Image (cartoon, rainbow, N blue to C red; front, side, top):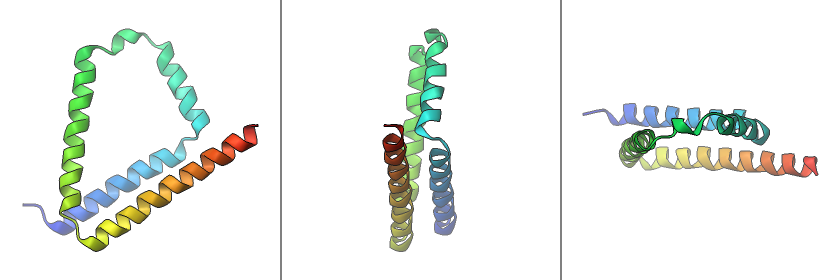
Length: 102
């Protein structure tokens, strides 16, 4: 079985990677990427592709939840602080960007 310390480090790295990726993209860049995706053929989104993506997402979520339940209370608290801080920072940047565009 995997050690608890290894699971903690793995979850922390995964959370930090998601946070860093989301902080690098501004809402303008995200909108540009979405418009590029819309311009592509819609045939790429078949039922089997969507099912595969959903299955991968479900498996990833279940794995991360299992890892999270194995963490100590201190690690859970620090992860919570990391996530709340990054979400707050992203919301502030989006609202400031929105106010500047008006």
